[in-house]
Image (cartoon, rainbow, N blue to C red; front, side):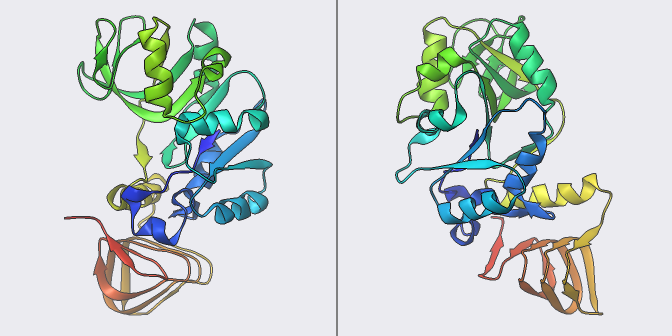
Length: 290
């Protein structure tokens, strides 16, 4: 299940102009990057929940080339409540949960195998860190022994939770109709003495939840491909403009003279050079604070 029902408050004003899950990263929406990583042949039904600009999410699901079910929430139910509401679409058993604003090349086959080989109600994907760093603490056996500020054992390493997890059937059955997956799912399980484990992700990952991190994710998309610039179909760049670490969406136009540096242009946007550190959309321009 891909969690895409949030309001995207931290991403404003971009989320005022597009569903957070559909903001473009490189050549396609963030949600498409997530779906690209869910490719194992034995993956069951794929469900995306939606609230803010739900019609846009449904339109994407119809045209993305994969069979995607959309679970619309007229009222926000929280990450745990969203899973409960989508249960009939997901079916029984274990479920992979992935926040739509997280782009990470997680090895899902190894994650599934790791979860299956150990007694655990859920496995959380984390980026390992030194002890006491990040919201997750892990013991010598890979069990989660700290979450948020609550401790349940002696930790040997910390970690940052990526918003990706694999939930077992028993934990799913206890999730509330409304509530948070961490606060109303993981923490009650730990308090009851149940086992949650961590799965280490040692590669870069990107949270497109703020304007700054969204811009960083686009620049990383260029870096991974060894590109200094990228322009989509129908994009027009004036002869006097130099693209320097810039993503220019399809049909976008760049006029003026000078550099366009560390910028993202959405499809059909128009920008004037020189410009630096900006996200340009057909509706307006956003810059990272500071």
